[in-house]
Length: 177
Image 1 (cartoon, rainbow, N blue to C red):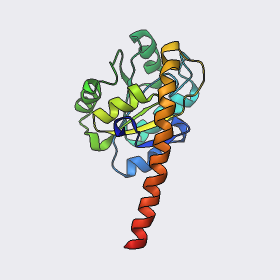
Image 2 (cartoon, rainbow, N blue to C red; image 1 turned 135 degrees about the vertical axis):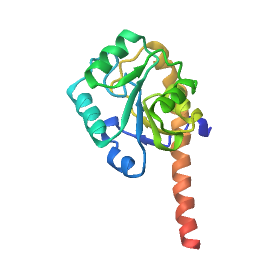
Image 3 (cartoon, helix red, strand yellow; image 1 turned 180 degrees about the horizontal axis):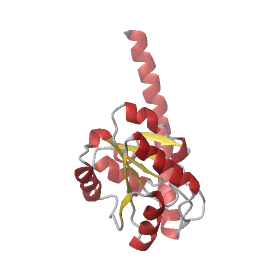
């Protein structure tokens, strides 16, 4: 089941503490686009532009990694000024590795941020990088994504139990030490 578990699960891409991650040594961030940065099919907005500028000013290398077609991803990338891979075939790890090779990073200092377990998170986990699952920005989605959300809910249920048990075990371990 851990193949489907993110390293972290947060409410929004825009609530991620990227400064902390940079201080911890992370140097590259890969992003899904739809429902991770903006609602499905929405153009890049001011919030997305500001995030990418802040990340790049901080020293992060950023890449959009999307299963969408090139016109959608290219248009978005031009606004946020980031490279992109379209039709990325997520969750296959090939393109995640391709980005790390291009950026000169490794799984230990690269983060994948996305809203879907079976593409973004599974692919990042297969590539052995840190993965951050964010809640979808908007409920409007294509039918194939809506259908994937059903088993995702089951996985998230067990993920939350896993997190509670992990925290409990850590507290118990600290008491014993």
